[in-house]
Image (cartoon, rainbow, N blue to C red; front, side, top):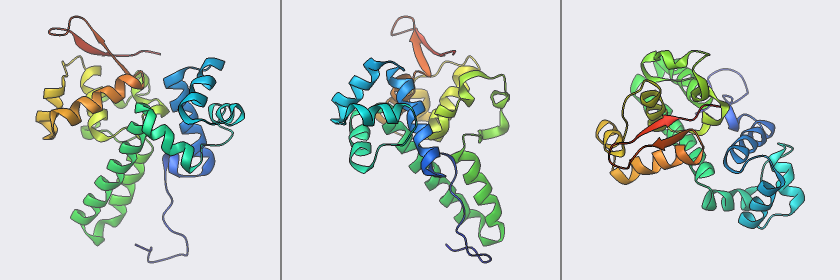
Length: 206
């Protein structure tokens, strides 16, 4: 919907704000998944069939992958896939809330969308938002969906969190819950400690 005043459309936030912001977020995601060595460049070349120069440029945030190579990353990388799903879900949530609050409170909907897109939104304003809270506020979380943020919040507070807990709270399938957790593990934000039956997830500290 066009704004009532002015000639500019509402600005996008986070990775969608500009080409440079997109390039920086993708570079962070790729380094988080593959590391920051020449081996990571080789892995990207093998996954996408991109040239060595292109892969190096992505890792250095000189520019982001274009359409075909980005789609290849989406198809092969759980981290990039989680990033895309997070953007989609955050925008859908913002649109749903804007429809609920109505045009009289449109500014609230836009502000909420901005917070989610930049990774600053957390339900119930939990203490995890503090600047000393560790990797939860890392720029890498910009693309995570709201369920994944909730998972990180619970784990940070020392609460046991399994796929069944996510599925029950958010009323989604076990498969969706497992995909959310797998995405966090692939981003190196969570790791599982202990036996399969009685172990638990922990935050990965930088």
